[in-house]
Length: 412
Image: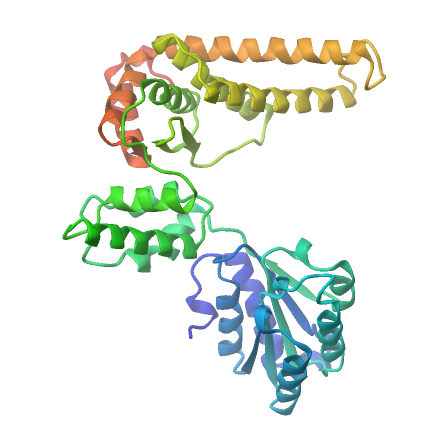
């Protein structure tokens, strides 16, 4: 097992873990200052994010023996046995892994036994670490009586951190030269180490089955999509390609950051931004223009309007409506009536949302008409393999920008 310093990324969380390790190793020094020592730590985050890894690293660095209890094995007899052993070998750590495996109602007696055992542990001698996917899944009475001294919440790693965290998975000589770890991390944005590991393993299995000497980026993308419940397209659909190319092009031309484009087997597809920034109202407006750009592009190039366009309109309508309501609550006079459910309120709100959508659609359409060559370049590449990754998108985009007269170049 590795120590805390071997954990890649999660800088703030690692620092908190180090502070916990310090008082567990130097309990007496803290007591001299009259510090009330924490007795328990909750580590929460989705599966595969590294909760157990952090608990193990803590045990290694503070040189304490760790006693495991797994959620699926939790029963009153086992709980008593583990805590009795932990108190006997103190100083120790009890790790209750995946406690949210328990059911709040059916396992209330087990929760009760855990609370009793934990409150019987002396401060500093037995430190309890609990892991759960989501703190909200735990019973309120347990969280309250558990006295959460310290909480570490783990989100999936940022793309830059993921490149370092996932690197050991792809350090194999069986990967084709076309593999780009940054492209993969942009594609697997907001995903865990466990997801990346499974995608790589499934890709390897597919490559072996196909008789390939090495796995390609396409093997990994296909495997990654299947893990998300999607399937890469096996034939070209022009409407989907133009729709997603429209999102991507307008996003880039308005200063956004692209992650990838993918066309799906059930038709349709999606474009994702690398970093979705909404710090200002200008950022929101950019997102609204990008949201309707797929519909605009599809209609300009193919004369069609797909289900994807309808979904985009539904989503952007909801977002604009929410924003208008916030502005109204701050004194923005959009409504003829202060009554929330009055016809005047609803009619004026609907007109405002419709007007805004038309404005954003017209803006998207203007950008697309002015930059048709960029759209066509994206679509031409999508015909080959039905996806474009981060580096490929920017290769096309930068080449297009360089081809423009300097006076026509837009900031991207």
